[in-house]
Length: 520
Image (cartoon, rainbow, N blue to C red; front, side, top):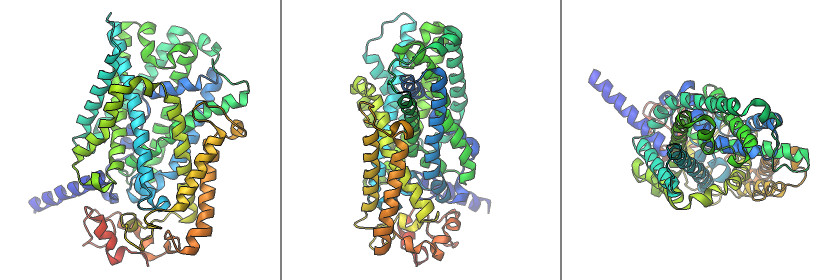
C-alpha cells in the first residue's frame, strides 16, 4: 500500500507540475505557495535596481518630502488596480493572467494579453540585465580597471544565461530561489539608503531641488504619482503567475500589497534621494556607490544588486514562459525549450542594443500605464459587476463553436474597443514619449481615467451588444455548472468536473467537452 501511495503522490506532483507549466487551472489542494512564499517571491520581484530608476524619474518633478508622499501614494493606487483585477480570479480558479483575460477578449483575442505580458516582462528583464552589467563594470572600476563598454553587454548576457539555468529545472525553482533572496534584497535597500544618508547628509538631500520640474506644481505631483502607478500596473503580468499557486486570495492579499506594492515604493525612495543629491546618477546606485562608500562596501552592495536583479528576472521570465505556453505551437515544446525562447530576445537586446534600450526607459514606463490600466479596468468591471465573480472554467480552455468565450471567431470586439478607448484616453492625457500632459491630468493622472474609461465602455458594450446577442456566457452565470466551479477546482485531478473519476488535469480540452462541465 505504501508503494501505491508513493506512486499516487508522484502522479499528483507530476500532474501539478504539468498544470503549472501549461497554464491549466490548478486544483486548490495542490497549490503549495503559502503567504510566506507569496511574500518572499513578491519582495524579491519588486525590489531590484529598477526601483532606483523609478525613484530617479520621480525626482525629476518633486523634492524629497513631496516625492516620498507621491511615491507611496502612487504605489498603493497602482497595486489596488492589480489586486482588484488579478488576485481574486487567479487565486479562486488557479489560473494565470492570460487565461483570466479570455472572458473579456475571447479565447483567441487573449493573445493580446500574452503579447502584453511578454513585452512588459521582456522590457523589465532587459533593464535588469543592463543594470546588472553596469554594476559589474562599477565593480571592475573599483579595483582600478577601466572596463570597456562591452563589459555591460557580456555581463548582462551571462546573467540571462544564469536565469535560464535556474528556470530550466522547472517552475518550482521560482519559489525555491526567490524566498532566500527576499531577505537579501530587503537588507540591500536599507543598506544603500543608510549609506546614502550617512555620506551625503539628510539635510543636503532634503534641500535638493528637482531638475526637470514643470511650472505647474499640480502637474509635478501628478507626474510623480503616475510614474509609480504605471510601474505597479506592470505587476499584472507577474501577479497571476504567482497567486495561482496560492490556495486563496485572502492568503495572497497582504503579501502582494506589501511585497509588490509597497516594496516598489519603499525601494524607489532610495532612487529618489540619490537622484536629487546626485542628478547625473538618475538614481542608479551602480554609478555612485563605490565613490560614496569606498571600494569594499561598494563592491558588497553591488554584489547584492546583482543577486537581486537575477532573482527578479527569474520571476519575470517565469511569467513570460507561462504566457507563451498558451500558444499551441509553444505548448508542444518542452519546458526547457520554452524558457530558452523567452530568454533569447533578452540576450539579443542586451548583447547588441543595450544602450538605446536603456535610453528609452521612460517611454517603457509609460507603455505599462498605457496598456495595463485599460486591461485592469475591463477585468474589474467584467468580473465583479457583469459576471458576479463567476467564470465557466471549462469554456476558458474550449475554443469550439457555441462555447461561452468564443464570441466571434474567438475574439470579443467589445473588449478590444474598450481597450482601445482606454489607450486613447491615456495618450490624450499624457504623451508617453515627451511626458507632456493635458487637463485634467494634473488632477487625475492618466492611468486612472484610462482604467475608468475602458471599464465603462466595456460595460456599455456588454449591455448593448453582447447580452442581447447571447454572447459571452453572461446569461449562464447562475447555472449549476458555473456555481460549482470553485468546488471543482479543488479536485486534485480535475479541471472541469467534480466527480472522483474526473478528467485528468493534463487534458483540459477533454474536460471542457464533458457534459458535466458545460453550462446549461
